[in-house]
Length: 104
Image (cartoon, rainbow, N blue to C red; front, side):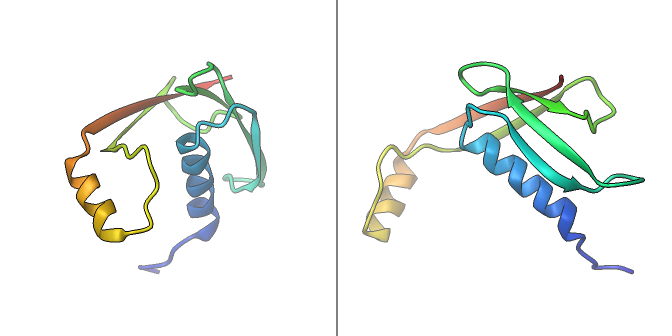
Protein backbone atom coordinates (compact mmCIF):
# COMPACT_ATOMS: atom_id res chain seq x y z
CA UNK A 1 0.00 0.00 0.00
CA UNK A 2 1.47 3.36 -1.01
CA UNK A 3 1.54 6.32 1.31
CA UNK A 4 1.46 4.30 4.51
CA UNK A 5 3.60 5.75 7.29
CA UNK A 6 4.97 3.27 9.79
CA UNK A 7 4.89 5.29 12.98
CA UNK A 8 7.20 3.06 15.04
CA UNK A 9 10.28 3.62 12.81
CA UNK A 10 9.40 7.30 12.44
CA UNK A 11 9.21 7.64 16.22
CA UNK A 12 12.54 5.86 16.59
CA UNK A 13 14.35 8.25 14.23
CA UNK A 14 12.65 11.22 15.89
CA UNK A 15 13.81 10.06 19.34
CA UNK A 16 17.36 9.48 18.07
CA UNK A 17 17.54 12.87 16.39
CA UNK A 18 16.34 14.70 19.50
CA UNK A 19 18.79 12.77 21.68
CA UNK A 20 21.68 13.72 19.39
CA UNK A 21 20.59 17.34 18.86
CA UNK A 22 20.35 17.96 22.60
CA UNK A 23 23.82 16.41 23.12
CA UNK A 24 22.71 14.13 25.90
CA UNK A 25 25.46 13.01 28.26
CA UNK A 26 23.78 9.86 29.59
CA UNK A 27 22.74 6.63 27.89
CA UNK A 28 19.18 6.38 26.68
CA UNK A 29 17.15 3.32 25.83
CA UNK A 30 14.38 3.19 23.29
CA UNK A 31 12.05 0.25 23.83
CA UNK A 32 9.92 -1.67 21.36
CA UNK A 33 12.13 -0.91 18.35
CA UNK A 34 10.78 -2.98 15.46
CA UNK A 35 13.07 -5.55 13.85
CA UNK A 36 12.57 -8.26 11.21
CA UNK A 37 11.56 -10.71 13.93
CA UNK A 38 10.65 -9.28 17.35
CA UNK A 39 10.85 -5.81 18.91
CA UNK A 40 14.06 -5.00 20.77
CA UNK A 41 15.47 -2.28 23.00
CA UNK A 42 17.98 0.08 21.43
CA UNK A 43 20.57 1.82 23.64
CA UNK A 44 22.46 4.93 22.55
CA UNK A 45 25.39 6.06 24.69
CA UNK A 46 27.64 9.12 24.35
CA UNK A 47 31.25 8.14 23.65
CA UNK A 48 32.88 11.52 24.28
CA UNK A 49 32.27 14.60 26.42
CA UNK A 50 31.35 16.74 23.42
CA UNK A 51 28.54 14.36 22.42
CA UNK A 52 29.81 14.05 18.85
CA UNK A 53 30.17 10.26 18.99
CA UNK A 54 27.63 7.73 20.21
CA UNK A 55 27.56 3.96 20.44
CA UNK A 56 24.39 2.12 19.48
CA UNK A 57 23.44 -1.33 20.79
CA UNK A 58 22.34 -3.51 19.12
CA UNK A 59 23.98 -2.14 15.96
CA UNK A 60 21.19 -1.78 13.34
CA UNK A 61 23.29 -0.67 10.35
CA UNK A 62 25.23 -2.64 7.73
CA UNK A 63 28.26 -0.28 7.74
CA UNK A 64 30.84 -0.01 10.54
CA UNK A 65 29.89 3.59 11.33
CA UNK A 66 27.25 6.13 10.36
CA UNK A 67 28.20 9.79 9.98
CA UNK A 68 25.39 12.30 10.37
CA UNK A 69 25.98 15.80 9.04
CA UNK A 70 23.63 18.67 9.86
CA UNK A 71 23.83 22.28 8.75
CA UNK A 72 22.06 25.17 10.36
CA UNK A 73 22.40 28.58 11.89
CA UNK A 74 23.20 28.94 15.56
CA UNK A 75 21.26 31.42 17.68
CA UNK A 76 22.68 32.02 21.15
CA UNK A 77 19.64 33.78 22.55
CA UNK A 78 15.88 33.37 22.79
CA UNK A 79 13.34 35.76 21.29
CA UNK A 80 9.87 37.01 22.14
CA UNK A 81 9.55 38.89 18.85
CA UNK A 82 9.37 36.67 15.76
CA UNK A 83 10.45 39.45 13.38
CA UNK A 84 13.60 40.11 15.43
CA UNK A 85 14.31 36.38 15.58
CA UNK A 86 14.00 36.04 11.81
CA UNK A 87 16.24 39.05 11.22
CA UNK A 88 18.87 37.66 13.60
CA UNK A 89 18.60 34.25 11.95
CA UNK A 90 19.29 35.78 8.52
CA UNK A 91 22.52 37.33 9.83
CA UNK A 92 23.66 34.26 11.79
CA UNK A 93 26.60 32.27 10.47
CA UNK A 94 26.11 28.78 9.11
CA UNK A 95 27.49 25.92 11.19
CA UNK A 96 28.05 22.30 10.25
CA UNK A 97 27.75 19.63 12.91
CA UNK A 98 29.01 16.09 12.46
CA UNK A 99 28.00 13.17 14.65
CA UNK A 100 29.31 9.60 14.43
CA UNK A 101 27.29 6.56 15.38
CA UNK A 102 29.41 3.50 16.19
CA UNK A 103 28.75 -0.05 17.33
CA UNK A 104 29.37 -0.66 21.03
